[in-house]
Structure formats: structure tokens, C-alpha cells
Image 1: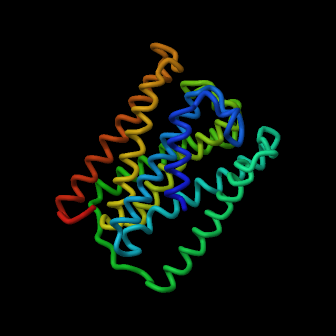
Image 2: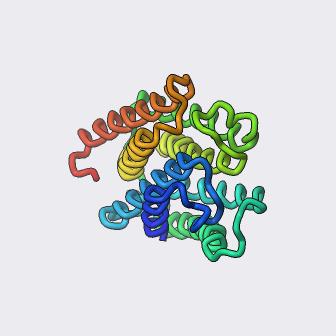
Length: 255
């Protein structure tokens, strides 16, 4: 379900970012916000599709669940806080809220069932430098996501394009995905379990980069916020590839 929703929503938002008032749950402005969201949804859909096709055990996919849960819960809260912005006479709006609620409940059930069925797995420990890098990334992204969600009006001024309180909270949800994934992965200390989510995150951030570069007219030229944004995404891709290559060398048959 997550794969299907991600692929469909991501494709539509990327192809028609300027016409969300005609088809989406709310009117997203500026178009760069819709493009950013579309890249995130498409990356998530691709990641889940890879997991569906290639993951063989619970261990392969278990680190994907916490970030998805966190994001879905964030979207539910953001929707309820900004209910006045949504077009409740449209089916898509009820699907938006219903699917995210279902994802939260379904994810909790999956975690409970799989933990009971399979118990704990002996981890394949990462090296201390790898865990430290994940913790730094997790803390840094959490330091961006939490203030953006809690104080959207004030913190949105630091973002490189215009955000409303609602879209600031939605963007914070995507940043929070990185924070949760990085910290959960560091705590799990299992490079085998990290393979699939790391591939997925790399794909997603590359999509963020490409979509934002294509839509760079929404960014202020030479603005330090834009520079920080693109540099941060570039470093995220480089760091993900670095860690993925280290994992691949230890386990050549990894995804």
C-alpha cells in the first residue's frame, strides 16, 4: 500500500506541481513544495517496491518501519492542526487522512507481530565511526525537523523557499524521516538491516536534489539558505553512498 501510494502521489506531484488546487487534498504553494513532496513520495514508493521484490526476511525491512511510522504520525497531526486548509469535500482528502492513520496502526501491528514471531536477531555490528556518523546525522536532522514542526512560522524563515505553517510541518516530516532512520539504525547496530533503507534514502535524496535543481527558479539566487540546502543534500547522498559501499564490501550479496 505504501509503495502504491508513494509511486502514484509522487508521480502526480512531480508532473503537475502547479495545479494541486485542482486535484490534491489542499492547494500547495509554491510549486517547489509540491515538487519536494513528490520527490519524497516517489523515493518512498521505489524503496518499498525494492523491499517488496528483494527483501527476504524481517531483518531486511525492519528499519524502514520506524521512519514511515514517524512520518505518517506527523502527517496526521499536521492535518488535524491545519484542518481548515484541507478540501474536505474531496475524496482525496479523506483518503489522505485515512491512509496515514491506517499506516500508523498497520505499522504498529507489523512491529508487534514480527517481534513476537521472530524475536531478536543477532546483529552484525557496525564500526564505531559508522555509528557515530549516523548519530551525528540523526541529531542534526532532528535539530532541524523538531523546531520546524513545533514553531513553523518562525523557523520557516530559515528555509530556502516560502513555506506556510502547514507545508513547514509537512517538510519537517520528511526531514524527520532522516532523523528517525539515522538514529534507529545507529541504535540497532546491524549493517545487514541497514542495507535496504540506506539504498532507499540514497534514491530519495537524489530525487530531492534533481527535482529541486530543475525547479531552482523558486530559490533565491546566491541566498545562503539555498546553498546550505543543496550542500546538505549533496553531503547526505555522499554519506549514504560511502556507508553503503562499506556495507557492500562486508557483504557482497547485499541489496
